Length: 458
Ligand code: BGC
Image (tube, rainbow, N blue to C red; front, top):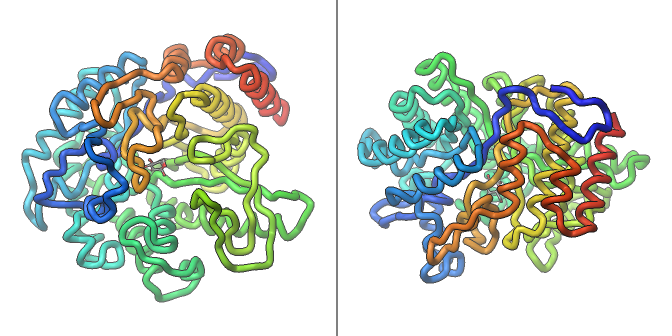
């Protein structure tokens, strides 16, 4: 590890984990309808989400996952994050589906034969429909059912070392229980999370306890397991760093969205999982309502209007702000004092116009955080393959590998080749990669300026 300041070769620590990620529901397909998750029900009720003929990566079909993992191994990535679907494993309380265990075992064996280390997520947003119908995360029995599922999984796959109990509980609560856009489509005030004794607080409490009991179950069965939560981080900075209102607001908003769940789970984790995509500058505004712009994005939120100064945005309109990534890593490490695993980072970019720029600048930001003492175990790019982007179906494409959702045709994106060069060398040769992969001059100049500024700030 270690480069001289200003150097253009950014070396990563020996043994650094380079990988990519998917979640079960987003890639598996093949839901025969005999049993459903809450998301299957949601998608059926909204036929506009998946269009006729769209099948996606189809990983439940033997061969599909295996072939894609072969492409991932060709890129030289040594780590892979996937999730195991509770609904497939537990047919009904107490009944385990051995065929589903067998299918996941096939996928894990394939990873092993390719020398790729798995990281398993135990809940990536979906719930078996029978649990959702009985109240979902508001019902403490969902927590118990989850812990029973976790016990089955860790006993079956006890040679796996890295585990993520929950994916983005903060986002799940926001999307499912405050905005009401995701199952269970409940809309409650954002203030609920601050008030005692209400549905949103019970959901949060049950999720926290589900994590704690799952972590205990994992450690009990696999004593050297490393356990974390994948936390969504939307990093926030003041619009005007001299305005006490903006400063106060940012402190509050970072706590409300980014820190609270980590505070509650930090004592029962080995590492901090960070899913980082974007960030905003916040300006104080004296109003409590939400406003959305024409794309459905948040134009203003209670007490604040978000904005950004980024030159480039993803297909979802999210600003590309790598300096927010290094700032987040530094502060989260100082605050929580746990090694960090970047469990997701990426962008929607169908034509692969900005992915190389995004990866290069974010990995430089990550390197900068490591230089300043942050202990980072690895980096997982979201996603390995294009997949079902929740309520947006196949509209947005996050994959290192492009998948035609109708024909299933795969194409390794050019940005994946750049990422492979970095992973293979365990270092970023900034000038050479910028020259080779950032063919747009504005992107090249901007990336080099961002990387120089990151280093200057040290
Ligand atoms: C989720 C992924 C999702 C990605 C892009 C993350 O919040 O964990 O499932 O596909 O963001 O929106």
